[in-house]
Length: 208
Image (tube, rainbow, N blue to C red; front, side, top):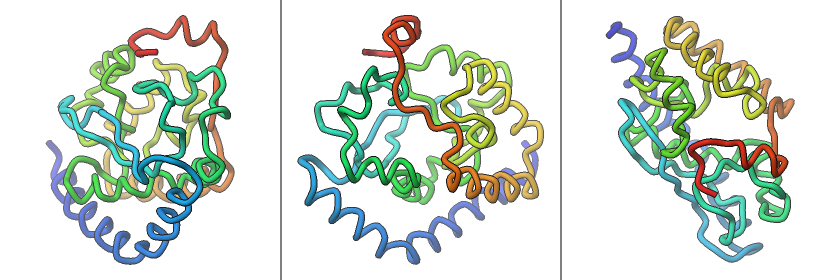
């Protein structure tokens, strides 16, 4: 394990703590908007895989109705617009729904930069990541694959990019990914909401 991995943990915690202290008014505004415009909890939690494939619950601001199918990637839903709330559309477009993952970082479950945590039942992706050792480090709030295609990427390519991140893991590379993420969010690159029936039926390892 290269020395930077241990330094990275400290950097993640300090930056997440600063982020929480600075962004709490944003958290409050979003929480009020969600609670006053749709029924259900403010936060959404979902079982994901962390370091060494340990399970944890990722946190997000709830952007969808409470009757949305569980444990299914949003881009595989046939009609995601039916389930996404009005506030949720804005949060997803701006990626503000991901902010509660700062809590996951403070808890030591995630890093700021790393492979995005797979759903527990995305077996094909998990298996592909095993080939590159991408399941052996903490997942990230953002990652190299996220800024190089995001939802549009096939599983093999996504895992390969996660492998590239592992091979290039360094403070300099994390800084590069972080600032490229800001540009990607501003342009809404690679966001895919919805799919066809054929795509859903051909997806392995996903509970419908």
